[in-house]
Image (spheres, rainbow, N blue to C red):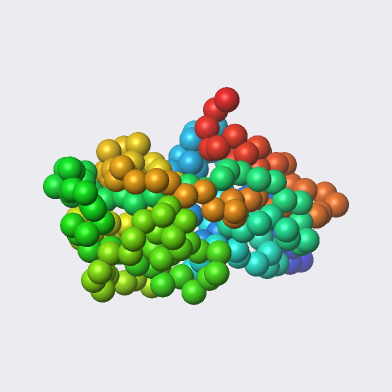
Length: 226
């Protein structure tokens, strides 16, 4: 009899532990590039303030992850016209050519710096993803000759730029922190601001978890104290 009561007590405690864990965890869905270069650096400050909250990050290859079951927040790139939750704008994008500072110095003074190093292309497969051809057209620049180098995702291309392999079309959400840290540098060429921007999508729930609201507030502040 006592053994049976003990097992029931253990089961109840396990359920309570799971409930406590669920209440203090947040699952965020975003692209792998956004997770690597924008979200993860900002979670360091969040954990310093909210060390008891666990943030689980689910990544997709590109910009607009679905609001799957279990997802508390989604960071999406687009026009903000989604209907599967409350949509909050995080920040506008800006796109400009970037490269390793040593490469920038080598290209300095060239009349056409984009011809002095290979262009790093990302085969995103999305209409909203601004590629080199669209950037050059909007910036009023000529398309350099040469095949360049091609990658299947932005993380690979960014690493290639950090390795000095060529010129990357830098998105502020991904390369902004790398530029501020001095690891990449912008070329003196016109920036382009796409129509799309980054948004936080919060599913409509009758009783949202306090942990979700805390992380939402932190990301809306840009991931820093205000």
